[in-house]
Image 1 (tube, rainbow, N blue to C red):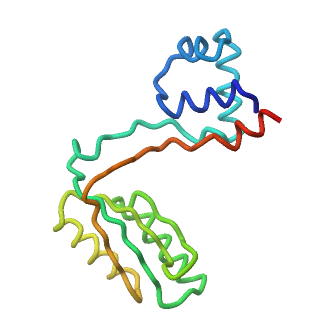
Image 2 (cartoon, rainbow, N blue to C red; image 1 turned 45 degrees about the horizontal axis):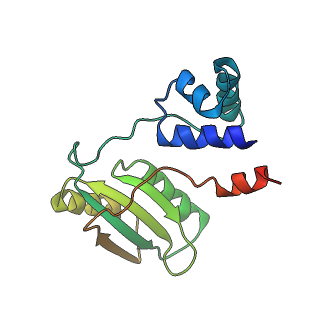
Length: 158
């Protein structure tokens, strides 16, 4: 991993539709070595997949909720049931198992409050909880999929 690879990762995170020619120009390489580096980044697991980001409001996903879940038991079977349930609910776009007082943090997108209520009822029907708390986003200040590459940049300078 060198400065060119890091720059390629940054460029691709911002716009994966850049052509090999455009990327090559930005990193000062010819197209074939640039293409090989990108493939190597994929093969080495630095790039998991290439996707298109959909504007959630254009598709009617107008409400974002942060849902905090505390479960009443922490055995492996219950953890697995919860994970399987969440994986099959498309409205949950992110899910994290947390340390501290909250066991899970879910990011949920739905079209409206009625849709959230349907999501909520579906969730509590499938998994028993001790507590579920929902907070609704009023304004989106920042939303990005770009991962900071600061650590890689620091390591490449050594």
